[in-house]
Image (cartoon, rainbow, N blue to C red):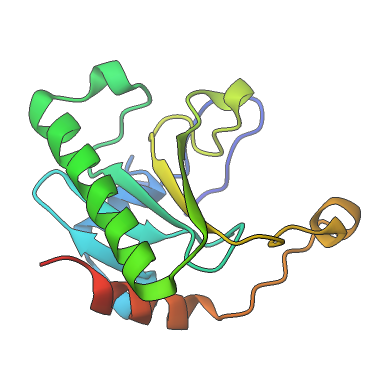
Length: 158
């Protein structure tokens, strides 16, 4: 896998033209290794490898598209239905005080992989932010990614 090219909007790819997210969606590796929570016909959900809080996940189309307008009607419907299921799983498994749902479209908006849009689902608790992220560029999580994945997978709506 190659890294992000800071000079362009080129997404991570596997040398065969697939983005990192497309590789994850294809299921070449076990879900407990890739932290994929759910796969549908056109979209899937995966844990964020660099979470803001425990349980931070992403919902995205299997196909690499950078803009909402590029989604087919089927992808659009499944994307938002999967976001709804993700919020339900987060609420059931983690009982947060709230949930942020958001999309960063384009590098200027904060998209780390602008060529493959993804919807962030971020559980929130009162007092879950502190100076550590700002001062040391470090995030402190009370739960390992694998444990959050297990809890969310078990709570995912059928």
